[in-house]
Length: 234
Ligand code: ZN
Image (cartoon, rainbow, N blue to C red):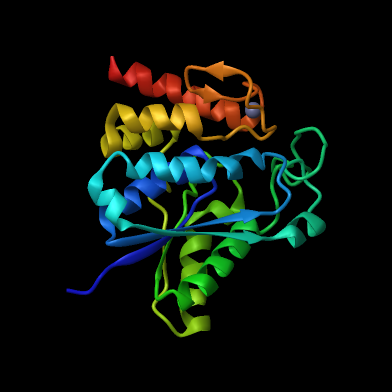
């Protein structure tokens, strides 16, 4: 039997933590990759090691499967994009109808770097938490974009690369539900306490759904999903 392996784009946020649990359930060997690009919510990067440790403490099989973590510096991304994720400017919609948190083509770069690293590590499956349902229309989160990118990577590296996006068609309530299915109350609790989603990097204010400012678009989405998921449970 050949060993299956995957590289998970792991930012330390809610979505990528659920993706990591999903991958640990399915692949024999799972590695993680994160990027430092001067994001305002860089706090999420500092949460990564403790989330990895807590996750594998939940199941012995996950412990056996989790491999190395990689962090790449992508400071150039901060240089070429002037958005509210990397600069101290207010959140607003741009003329193109996109929130100004949009870093143009960010996920294309993330997956391309991930593929280059995965190539050398003998990994051919890349996993990311992008979602077409919730992500404010970011064009680099769309299924068509990522499936096409997967094909381009496979051609460009002459290797059978595939991109998997387990959250593509579910909303934030569905993401909480998937977390519960994968790791029960313990995983839901870990996500509430340790994962960071807030664009402003607020780690002070505690809500039922997690820690954050409570008003930025990311907090808003996470809070609404939590409420919906709870309604569905009762
Ligand atoms: Zn926030």
